[in-house]
Image (cartoon, rainbow, N blue to C red; front, side, top):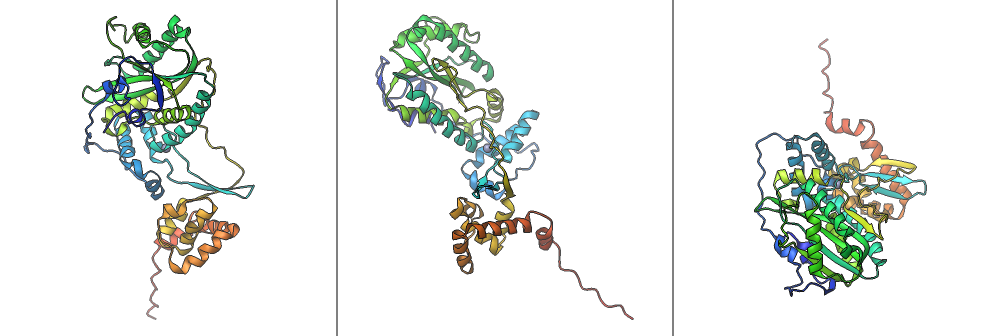
Amino acid sequence: MKSQTHLLSGPLLVSGSENPAPRQGGVPPSVQALEISVTDASIDDGDPVPAWIQTHVQHVVHRRWMPIRRRLYTAWHRSGDDQLAKRAERLNMCCASPMVQKGVDGASKTRMMRCRDRLCPLCAIKRSERLGSQLVAAVSKMDDPRHIVLTAPAVPDFLREQIDGLRHAFRALRRSDQWSGTQRGGVYSIEVTLNKKTGLWHPHLHIITDGEYIAQNTLVDEWRRALQTSGIWSEVRDDQAVVVWIERVGNRRRLADYIGKYVAKPAELESWPEDALCEYAVAMRGARLVHAFGSLHGMKLESDDEPNEQAEPGVVLAVLPIINAARRGDALAIAVCASSRAHGHAWDQWAGVDTPPEEIERVAGYEVDEEAWWNAVRCLHHEYATGLRGWLRERTPDPVPTEPPWW
Ligand SMILES: [Zn+2]
């Protein structure tokens, strides 16, 4: 398992290397230096953790990430930190109970009610999609963009302090004559990897900057000087190597897309020990993923505060009771789920139930008649989600007939 697959997977997104040393396969030296071997960490089952409960919808929606979701949930609860425990519960509820809304325009839409946690794998993908398009917009305005990776020597400090230190150092670098004389502005993000052997963090900066040629050895010297002002890396010696990677950007759209993906991706969490999952979660909380600087300063980057979906006027109903009814074999619910795809929903996938032959005609009818389908949705909702009728019918045993009195 590679820790830096995002860099290894598309090494030739950029062209015209300005780095002096030849390399193999276009892999930046920072990647080789940071590459780590990974073993699976086991989870102790010793201490009590509140129950991990997932609805069937979650099992379908989050199926690719169930192990890491469960590890995050466990680690955050065991941490003893109230904030992390709350985040664990929000993560646990991500997409648990989708709602369907029918707006005043007549169109129906399923709302997923996501947790929006920085470390939630599904929410990270959604964030990266938005971020990718923002980065494309930023890079497309640049005349001559370059991709720069700046790393710092591994130190045992807290991750949050290292991140602050890197930001401080990068500000110092931008004030230097060598940088300010050649680079106009751009965007940068901080990526974090963990060296499993040493247990040390490796935060590093990815920058897309618009400007002119800057020699790599010049940048190495300036970056070392900048690091020395940061406190954390004040001990870095003048002859110490710091890893710096520069490449001119060839295909801008692909570069921006791929940066968007790794920026929003919650690192390689799967293999991290529990204390690292907690420290990373706390350190990255509220930290912005992407910053604009220089000529792009002030550019709108919405990646950090994903807006909550605005409530619109209309009818809102819970979908989960309908999914559950279909899974229990309710014929109407099965038909409603099977025909939902025709109206832009994926309830058939969530229910995962085959349509019985006698319902095929009803499904076809609902597919062409949106109003009939919606009426059936309301009917089911009324049956199973409001009041106790459905619940009672399922759980209350038939009344035992009372014997007639002896007289
Ligand atoms: Zn989520």
